[in-house]
Length: 351
Ligand SMILES: Cc1ncc(COP(=O)(O)O)c(C=O)c1O
Image (cartoon, rainbow, N blue to C red):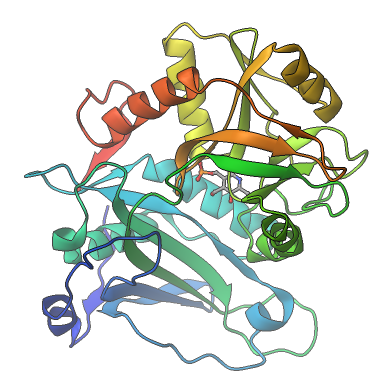
């Protein structure tokens, strides 16, 4: 079912005046349109497609004071000569609703979510890049618009979708630094929600990792600082004795759509998959003994990327020797996402 929405004046001109940049990066260019809907008095209303641009928000809005804000990250793809399509959008919709529920916000109904995605993608159909690994990155966000100096649940919200024609998030292998000091998420906290606050909690570690020549931090569990959790924007995998190992989903980890897809593809290819608690000291021992041959990360933005160095705060470094399973699973996923292979799991939604 679709929801009725208004197309505001200026959308056609904004689209006509836009052209794809020569060199696509990730998330550097905003698409010319955005979708918006308001929530108040228990109802969603004023769904509209409008030209991309600044919005006005009251400075005391609770989203600004108390981080009442959740988001999603997903992609629209286009194979040459075909209509654009989405990848497992219903999973993002469910996760978005779960994130909203955790923060006491009203979930965006599936029909409104899908209508917004289709409206933005169809308006930008000519700007969905067709080269492999590139896409129209879509960023749904839900935030409180209610003014308030006191900590209380808001009653008014705005749902928006912006987009960016993008290449893949990172093109090369990553260097990952084990974070030994900060924690990203607490037990019983909001770590499993795609809440802006989780990303704010991760910023200092990212800054430190980059200052030390790494790309990103690897988070450990918040209780004992021992079990591997995930990266700041990606899930974590290791190939040990030929099997794929990844930490189990819990309340401090994002249940990645890519993670789930890679697990399904791996099982389908006859690769053993173990979702299990992974102590960091055990992993580094497996890297030293050669039992662990590969490390890689998964996420919508980055797709599937090899980790070619794992580093520790004390200066120790490990370099996994292979990328074979990572590359195999990356190709299989991209072949489905980019319609070179049959959609055998019914993952694509053609628009
Ligand atoms: C913290 C975190 N972990 C994992 C992921 C991977 O999730 P997905 O594969 O759904 O993009 C993301 C990205 O959304 C993330 O932000």
